[in-house]
Image (cartoon, rainbow, N blue to C red; front, side, top):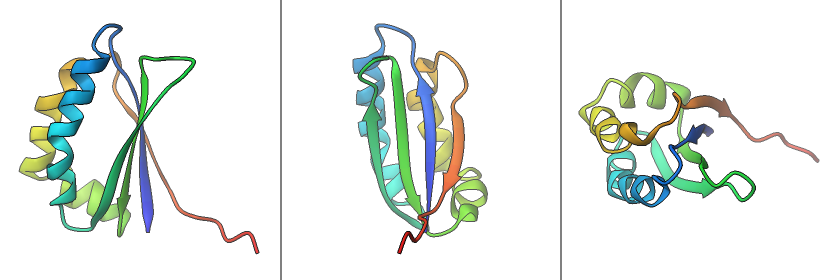
Length: 98
């Protein structure tokens, strides 16, 4: 499993509208091949900052399959207008600590 972590800064005042857009987009992620769930985290110190965390089976499920899909295009239609800057995306995996 890998997690896509997208840091998204939205324009001040657009927080509620952005959250509504993400809620509408959740089925697009959840219906994508290889997606095992999606969550949205909201910044406390910087309320215009969000982290979209999506669990994928593989990096390619995100970077190839989803990004080249109609679902991704619709996600960007729904939420992209609220971005203050382009999202910064990282892919991470768990580290076994024991």
